[in-house]
Length: 138
Image (tube, rainbow, N blue to C red; front, top):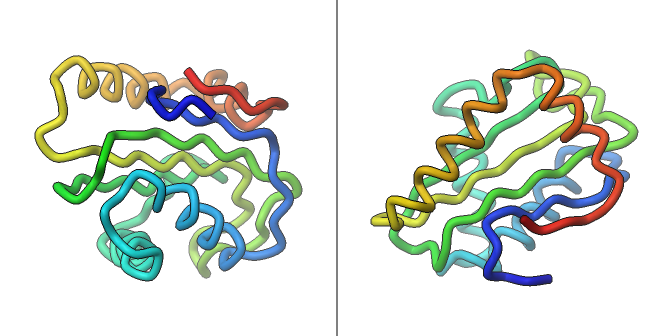
């Protein structure tokens, strides 16, 4: 994996629970943060309590900004089969997009992240992300 890239797109992953997904995200995200895996997982759960992270049916977007991040990253994680229940009000998850934004990030990187997040309003674009078959880095 080329860690200089902003995007990490993973092939469809087979998880059986929210806990397995959180462990995967914690391990992957932990490579780019200055925090422990436990603290990183706690941040994911804390962010979820602040407000819904579901941006479309079946699509979650946990996102964080921190001075402890080594670099900004976007993880795109299609899930097959879907996770039936994330929380009581969040069901049938088949795509997770996690954005890590390094505090005081260069404006060009912030612009790329902004351009990407605007595309997430397009259902066709989300469907393409959900159906990613190979692991790519952009």
